[in-house]
Picture 1 (cartoon, rainbow, N blue to C red):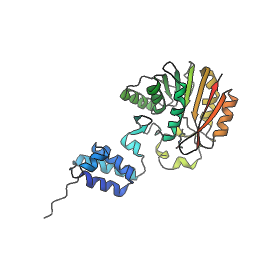
Picture 2 (cartoon, rainbow, N blue to C red):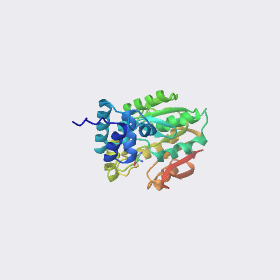
Picture 3 (tube, rainbow, N blue to C red):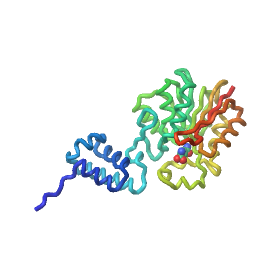
Picture 4 (tube, rainbow, N blue to C red):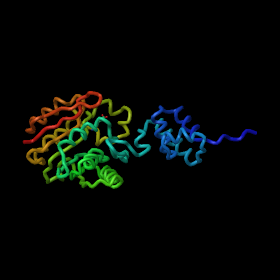
Length: 273
Ligand code: GLN
C-alpha cells in the first residue's frame, strides 16, 4: 500500500505557486511557515505540520478570492520598516515613499510635524524615525490609529496620536504638514479593481472630483503652519493642476511638483512665508 505523502515546504510552495504568482506564493509560504525564501528552498524536504498546511491553504484561498497579500500577512514594507496593516488602514504604496523622501531635507530633530490621515502611520513614523522630529499622527478612524500605535510601539518610535477629522481637533502650529488623503473620485472604476475594494473607503474616496479632502487639507493648512512652514501632499496623477491651484489660493509659494517612480505627478509641496 502506498504511504500518504507527507507535505513538505517544497511541495507546499509548489501548491501555492500553482494557484498564485511567484511573489504572492513566496510571501504566503514565508508567513505560513515562518521561514524566509532561502529557508524555504534550502529546507524544501522539511515536513510541515497539519496546522501550517491548513494555514497555507487558508491564505491561498483568501488570496485567490482577491484579498490583498498585505492584509493576509498583516504587514507591508515601506521606506525602511515593516508596518502592520489591517483592513482599517490603506496598504502603504511605494509611490508614497516620494513624499517621505522629499520632506526629509526640510526637517530636523526640533521640527514639529503633523501627519493628517495617517492610517498605519507609515509616513509619520518613517519621518520620526529618520529625523527625530516631533510628529503628531492623526486619523478620523480610531481603529486605524490603534494600528499606527501598534506600529510605533513595535518599532519603538516616539510620536503622538490624536483622533481628528482633518484639522478639527488641531490647535497647534507646525513646521510641516504631510498628508496622503483620500483622492480617488467616488465614481472612479479603480475603486473596484485589485486591492482597492478591500481597502477602507474612508482612506481612498475623495468625493465627486476626488479633491474634497485635498481642499480642506490645503485650504486650512495656513491656519496650522508657522511662518516658513511647509505643506506636502500626495495626490492623483491627474490632479497636479488642481492641487497647484489650491496651493496658490491658500497663499503658498515656491510650489513644487514631484513625480513618482512611474513618472506620474504625485506629490505637491509649498512654503508659507
Ligand atoms: N494611490 C492610491 C491608489 O491606489 C490612492 C491613495 C489615496 O487615495 N490616498 O489609487
